Image 1: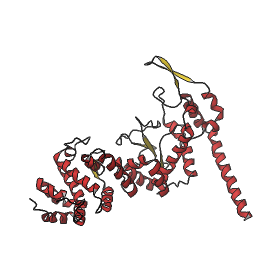
Image 2: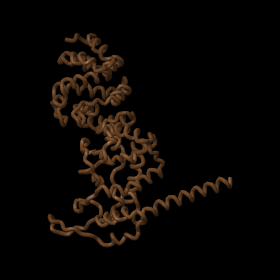
Image 3: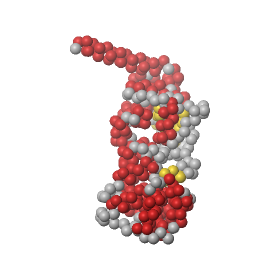
Image 4: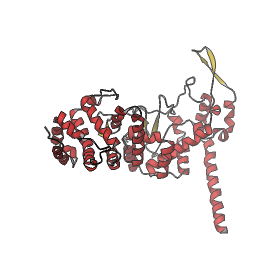
Length: 399
């Protein structure tokens, strides 16, 4: 017992010494100190006080962020796996021949590829940097947003001793500029920033389910964006969270908004190509029941918009004009591939399955050319579609 206690004490001492050494090393980094001095002089960015951040501002934070990741049990993965996962989660391809060290994932303009190093302002700028050679991701932060600079660099406190003012040409008066030490709950902000860093990386690259749970409750916007913006649909918990949220948001506005849910399933990518989110469709297929056909109903409604136009002006871009005839036929096939088997399975439950005919049957009557397109394109490789079309005769003749 005594030996175990001594070993524990030794480990604790070594651990403390290691932490102290790493913290002490911060002061040995002259580049970090110089950047911090400038950031303290500039103060937090605001409408009255726009600030400039460049690659150096970002790079001096990398050792700090890596240290925080390692302290919290993050395990780095190899390059090949990292490249695969960035493609999976963000639909971005890392070009190993490109000399750029970073990729910028833009949440406001997903097709943008321009690098930004300024911390997010959540109005005009919001995104994440992918460190191609360090194998993790992070938002960009100012130094005061990730370390307790007041204790670790106490000798720089004089930089914030006096208030600073700027002249407002519109109001014709001097306006006091915030100092970092005046930022409300700065310590809580630092803690949250580090938690976000750790849990995003541990979930994405270590498949840490505890981190997924943390993100669900504390950073669900990030998870939502993985699906909505970049098409990551392989996590059932995220699929459920997003579908339920979007359904509630739109159904509260009125039943006609039901079809807006289909925007999650069928999108045009940055190259203008149709992308179908198969994982999301599989989730709907697996979770449709005798008492729940919400999402299938929404998808069926969407088909009407595809061919009749956005009569209620619900969409930013009218789906009937957004997709080609072939793309529309493919969308219809993918919807029918899960809707028709569900109708056949649950049609005896008249409470919510009282529909007299499937979406595909109704469309075969009004737009028979769609059936021909599906057949001519080998049923879009959907193994059930041939049988589904043959069974349409049970609902009524295909013209």
